[in-house]
Length: 334
Image (cartoon, one colour):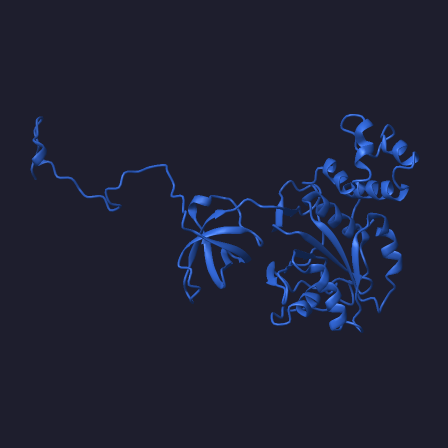
């Protein structure tokens, strides 16, 4: 073994080559200016299915994204193999800024938000009029989440052949929410067409608890992509989860998209700032100018009472606002 003295010559020093090459380390990341734009269709166990032009590409998050999540509806920048061929894998290197984000928490005490979909324009709240029974508290919570996210709500009532729709519609009439009523006996092309007209040209997320006919409706709207459906449990009166992951599907004949989401048993609102809900009531917003600071709009000194009493808005509108704001304080079964 050769030993080197105190004053060795450079030519005598052996340098072991680096396995990673000789490129100097840097904190600068590539800009990926040549990345293709993709639209996230579904996310399943780390694999992200994107639509890139007219091809379906499977991708994974790049390490540089860190813990930033990717959800259905995201617009992303994709690099790598974009052929869409079997066993190929691309990389998502950037998530573009979201126009809207629909969130929920497991319950009202859970501080961890879960993003349901991104970049949606509309939230279709699907509920059955019977089998299972409608849950107005869940509808209220979905409405609050829609107003908070800046989405237009759409109420879709199914199974009208089992119970009348009038009483439930009367509850939500002051909110001016668009609605459509369908039945199992009349679920034909005409009924599907009424729903399709309200979805055309928009990205619509479908939410509802299991068994209300949400996925059945999506299958009728997009017949070439049939998803599994389930029956309502005769003992518990609840549906069985058949949709396990959100999926975006193009609406035939239009530029619209429908996003089918898994059935929910609860819709937590821990993330919602009540001060944002008032903006869904433009006729009431001017009346808040005289409200005390940090007014909850449901207290003795709220200026909205005087605003409504003066005839600037309908009392039913104020009642609806306060009912929605109180949703976080009530259990869904109350």
